[in-house]
Image 1 (cartoon, one colour):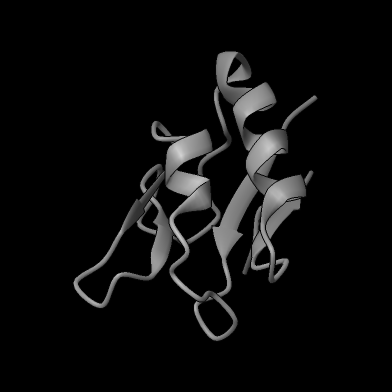
Image 2: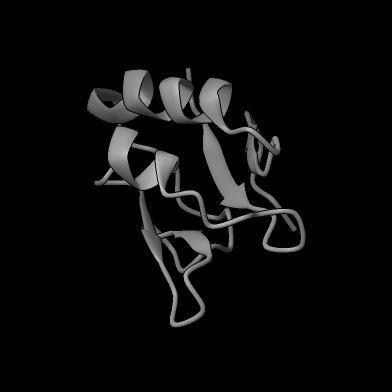
Amino acid sequence: MIYYTVVDKETCIACGLCGALAPEIYDYDDEGLAFSILDDNKGHVSVPDHLIDDLMDAHESCPTESIKINHKRFG
């Protein structure tokens, strides 16, 4: 199954959980807010198959539900 991801920076509280659970998918900008490093948070590049478990862990663990996932490209 193909997944795409973005982080809603409006609701992200910079807790660091997504980067800890999925460091190959998420990192933090200069303000400490998370973003998808796969495509600079655009949601146009699919998450590699070997990272899907990490994606799901981060998505399900985000306390503000800021990690968005979809089977179609965002935007």
